[in-house]
Length: 210
Image: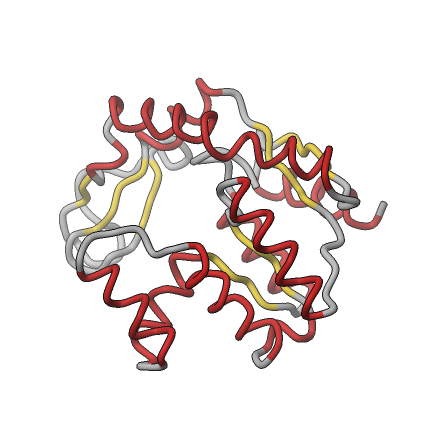
């Protein structure tokens, strides 16, 4: 867990590769479900096509499929989920029914000023889709180093949108950490998310090993 720009996706993928377990980000799950054509996938696609949020029960159903029938049987990292207390409660019930226990909630902690710098620095190539970040790679210009295409800032990375995204996180997702602390037996561990990717990853591994 952690606010937008904290590095959840990067660190989740590193943990997944290093530990040989599945990496589940809800956006990826929804896109895969839509392409699969399953009953739940079709239901998710119906909401996505209408531009609406996919209901919690549909998302939880898709996660259940993966941890009971897919590669998640051997362990998994949840990336940025649950996002609300209601999702946390539903996930807890679903995991209990499946006989699965969470080992830890790892929360990446990054100051707002640094989050803003990271998010507004992200650039996406309009041709090949590669993602870069001028906050970490100041040598990156207006052209994609991979294909020469034009690099653009995503609309949700505009400064005013970033501020709103951080506000929404504080309103909706930060309370999830309190729920885990107060209503569950899952340890919540704060991780310093600043510095080099390798340093943050080392802190995550040390927290898991502890």
